[in-house]
Length: 551
Ligand SMILES: [Zn+2]
Ligand SMILES: [Zn+2]
Image 1: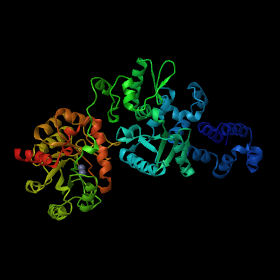
Image 2: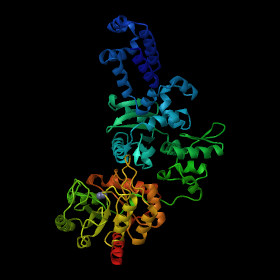
Image 3: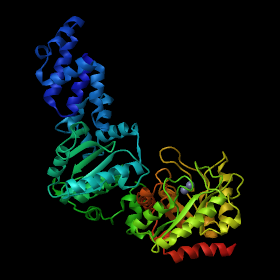
Image 4: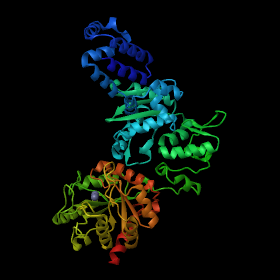
């Protein structure tokens, strides 16, 4: 009993509810002196035995039992705060050491003082937390942006953290809100949420459940927006490097701006202004890995990375003809709604390691279906393609005459067949040497959060792609995001052509998956000039025809 009351006291401390924390602490000490009979008597008349301020806690203990009541209260904390509660650290001492006024600021303090004790503690707590796939995170935040646009139209939302950097997995979902009176608008938003969904509220922020995920919304003043965006975007390593650069200039980097020796804050309303104050050009969020980007930026601004607006078509989509969910026509409509000029429909080949595949007879039927649909969509060129498996023996899963009848053929290695990297590379090199293969899809076959992907001799792979005129894919499906930024950078540095696809299996997700593909490519500094489907249809057809002619 005393233990549960102590845990509840700690949670009240974390919530910044000092009176409840003190009363629960006193109750813990008092209950420790009571034997079982006296304890029962106390609970029979709780308003006499305990401070009425904690009546709801005492009632919960009476109802659920002490341990369950404490655990339930913990579960209502934001993940970070619950993690801190479980570390067993001396909260008051940590708060005092960090000069914080209330322990409730601890989680927020991680953002304010990323280099301190709190940062180390939070990093440890977070390393034990599960991470969301980028697609899930983006889906939840897209819904929030849409809902907020209706509820608080004066606010502009800026997703921060790993989501803004298009990392394949996201730990915490943080969204900044700027605009007129952002604090009042965030408060109004929090007031409108079901109370049981609100995990945490402070002066500037609210943490709440949304679309099944925990999101923190934080108000930011327009004058501090640039500094806040840099600070909350991360990565931690990148911000640490910037903080070091600020120190060399006698400044301190904070979310409010750069603070000089006299304590004066120099606000930065744009990210560019903040970087400029550190004698750097603006560094795109997707490049803030904490690796060599600052050294690169010192030599000159990064050329603009490929953007969604550059994309003219999607060359990798699935329909009900294989394992996609939607019909050919729904897929076509989705591509048209995205403003694409062209679309390739590329279902799985007959013996692909996919849950559903297309037979050779099916390919002929599909060709007739596409032909019949084309006149209704004159503004969109519909290419009939196939994602053909490279089989374990290195052969392709369709006969040459069938592939030759398609507009575009993608090759992929869905089945590693337990082979070592040199065998996998040999399968790829063989496929790339084939004149009918125009693209290799998701080359590393990595699975974000689960598997790193093949450990190939990538320099040989990309050199072969360049020399054979085969494009290599950055696949935007959340289960792929492959090539990742690092390999995409190696691809373009080698001189290979990149294609960015949705690999969509659901028509309504094509746009989001393309955004993720583009963001992933941007992590590697891929520019529009490197990207096949940032070019017009004629250039795409020429790319395919040039290779076919070579054979
Ligand atoms: Zn595939
Ligand atoms: Zn696919």
